[in-house]
Length: 291
Length: 273
Image (cartoon, each protein chain N blue to C red):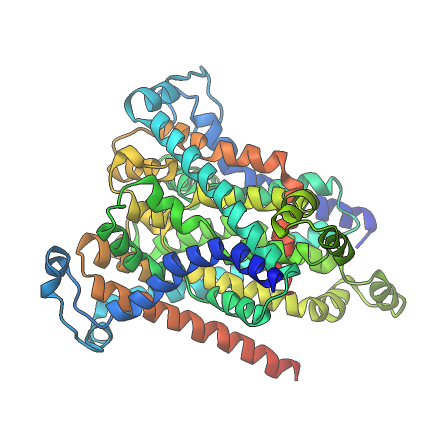
């Protein structure tokens, strides 16, 4: 009896914080998304009206929202596979018995992960400057014409994707590397005796055994990439021609520049539902494949 | 492929990858020491011919970076200390103290991880607005005072502690708090270090919630100050790079000095328990 009282006392501070500053606001968000909370309601709560699913209905008919959802999907669909490929490639290189100075390379490749996204996005803006940036300078050496990376609606999102891959690949690299190291050496030994090439060893030993880790990493990366915000905020301000406006960027604009909190919370919830559906589908698909 | 060629290929690729990973960081550092306006040249210079500290001096004297630096240290430090206290207590309770509904409650907490933090941000802003906490340090620190991931991490680690040790202390009549402070906490030291560095780095780099909550420049953290300078488009390249160095360097140094703990935490947090 005494032990359980101690337990609740130990739990109280953390549970209180999570309940008041997370659970309550999430429930509040759901309630808020059924109202027309705006600047007038902010001034006087009597102006608040219940609109049921009105905000969601309006979102479905708002091209801006569909565009933002499209940009976010573009970022996720291209960015996640690229990130995972970079992570897996780097992990395989670090795991190779031929690699030297492994600790040093691991630290160097991981360094971008701990940097501040906002600061590095600023650096990226200058590296991809049309006139003086290194990206175009290097392309120029290869005889390729300068690209207006952040000023051209076709190139702005790819530039942000490149940045995200650079910034994040090290994180999954560490997890995949640990996964590779957990594969018993005897399996490779056996494959080698059977005359399997390096590629076949990767395809038939590493990849299947790494499967569960890859799936977990993919799901975490997908949910992380759906939350695109700081990069467009600093690098492009959602432009050019709103081509990098993500759902969260739109939510921030609607909520904190126009004070349409009802609309903005509905946007947040739709994003949440989309993320949930996509990650659940990934889980399901992989289970079906395994079965 | 000959073994020699394979070895050259693997190490060459690693070297190339490391160069790509580090180039933006080194370039940022180099440009931050260039006199104003000199980095905008063709070919783009890699090294400051005449290194100066003017950019940093400008940032502190005119752009208020000293204040932002102090705010960042204060907020990240407070979040780290307070969340350590909350998460350690809760994580230990979930691992070692027996109470009704323990597993169910823990699973409910893990379910919270599915909800992206941004969903809570708008109502949280309203809550703080009515509580008079908008644009205050407390408004950034309070929501960061506990995290499900932190509790999870502590629980994972604390489950490995020997029960006999705790039972022996209980038989000796020690109170639960005494056991926690005197016996458990010293044994949890590695996970404390891991959690401390993970939390500090996350708090330091955090952007969206502080951006919403801190409406006045007086409370800005470094990322906020830097982002607002970047969106004004008035500062030169060199000064922006100096600002980026100031923002990134503290966490990079912290990471390098405590790398082992950081990477352990990353792996511990990614293993299903």
